[in-house]
Length: 182
Image (cartoon, rainbow, N blue to C red):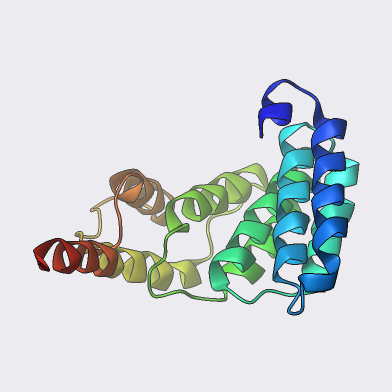
């Protein structure tokens, strides 16, 4: 991360490769390889190296996902990449594919709802009404009221803003339970 912050992207990528190589024999379930692939893709997207980022996202997907949060992370990085490459229709399809997988915690929902609205606007189309159910699930998971707005786009943006800095209710309850334990 330090190398990235200094703009030394190639050095950061070389470190990721070295870590992967050094631990390859111990990475029985490929979890470390998936983590390195995720960081490689994110590093390339953040650096604006979108053609390389697209290939990195494809390689990451080939490793598969063991957690839904990783699938959503991959979705967001793929969206950022494809959108930057001027391919918003493909970006929207990638986002919708990621959103078709649901997590009861919905940790990344705010960022994904905003991306859904932005890509739909870019394509000159409304957000598909099928995503209202996701908005309702997010509101329920965060124990907040659905925003009263005129359009689904405005509802999604308001909901994203409301939940952006929050933990879902289940996670908040867990934190409270752990704080109550002696």
